Length: 280
Image (cartoon, rainbow, N blue to C red):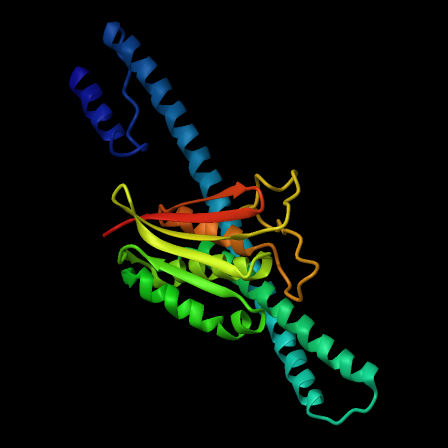
């Protein structure tokens, strides 16, 4: 009986389907009864856990599929609306109201399209997609992103000062770190109250960092501690730039995924966002 009990225990360590022990009328029999009860309780609990896990996984799958389908369905009509509005802008309308209406359709479709793209990015980040890391030069990437915003920077009279105190190279998923830096720079362009926006790339305590610093309007007390949460928007009502309130949240999620540290410092009329990552 002892050997049988030992074999069953060994089987239990590998599978919950180990066999029951045949009871005998002695002390070993009492131990066998207790063992059988314990084993069957474990089996019942494991079956419940497995069933619940499968339900959760199925729910997550359905949610992701719904989210992806919904956002893709939104993009299709938006693309058509924007296309038609661009065609209408080529017409020589004399009515000022019609001209402004066509421009507004274009502006709002662009705004909505950006929102859908950000929602899609979040849904892709939630999904289990196989991606590959590569070496990324933060300095070169930052310069490319600044160049991509050239027209906006010029039109609004901004001066971007880039201080390179070190060259930072990290092994990361390129699209993810690019999204973080793009959203932080775009956020400064939306909310800066000063013409000067300062960016610094360097190393602190063996870790590379990206810092961006600019003036900002007074941030309401109810949101100043939760700027990295979804749909939190500051006041840029005097600027013709729309905001979905998802940019900083995307930064937070992607930084968490890549084990980066992102935080911000508020000091009177200025705000500084900092991303710290290991230097590879």
